Length: 51
Image (cartoon, rainbow, N blue to C red; front, side):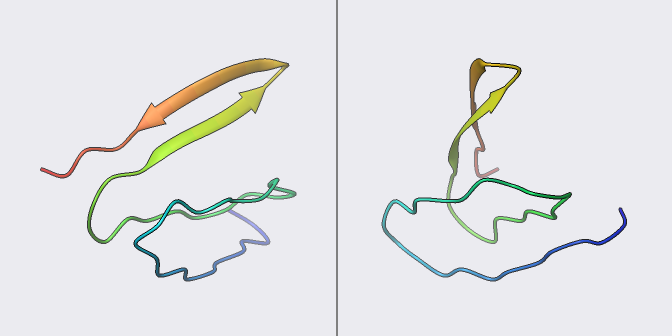
């Protein structure tokens, strides 16, 4: 990954993300994430699960 952007956000409430303008790294330290994304005008939903 070239020109990577990394930000750390700590929250226990729903978080409004942003539009990606380049490649990004994404990590979840605890809990679950319900991620909604759009690609080629198609909406997708991905949910992470704690194991």
